[in-house]
Structure formats: C-alpha cells, structure tokens
Length: 75
Image (cartoon, rainbow, N blue to C red; front, side):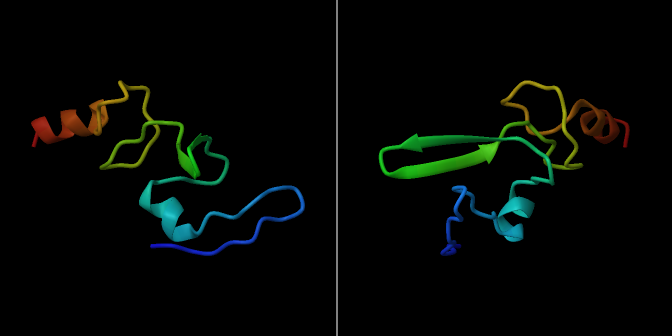
C-alpha cells in the first residue's frame, strides 16, 4: 500500500490511519525515524502485544505480553 503525501511548511506529514492501525500506533505514541540510503523508515518505538495491543515492558523479540501468555496457558 502506498500513498503520496505532501510535506507541510514545518516538514510534517500525516500518517494514514490504515498504516497506524497496521502497526497499532495511537495518538501521542512515539516512533523511531531512520534513514537507509534513500529510504525513510518509521516504526513504533514501543513493543506492543500482538494480541491485546497494549504497551508492554518486555523484551523486543517477544510479540505477546505476559498477561496474554498467562491467559492462554490458563484456558
């Protein structure tokens, strides 16, 4: 999915809601912006659980929070 977006006078662009939903970004969330050659990369700065979507203090390589893991185990 691609969009053409204009950059405003202050250098800002608006991220389409479909992009924000896909990586579970909400208003006031932080993002990491980096550049690799001629590509700008924007990614969420917080690791969020892929099941519940809540911000979790967890190892970066984990995809599911401890609460969801416990809930699955206890099913």
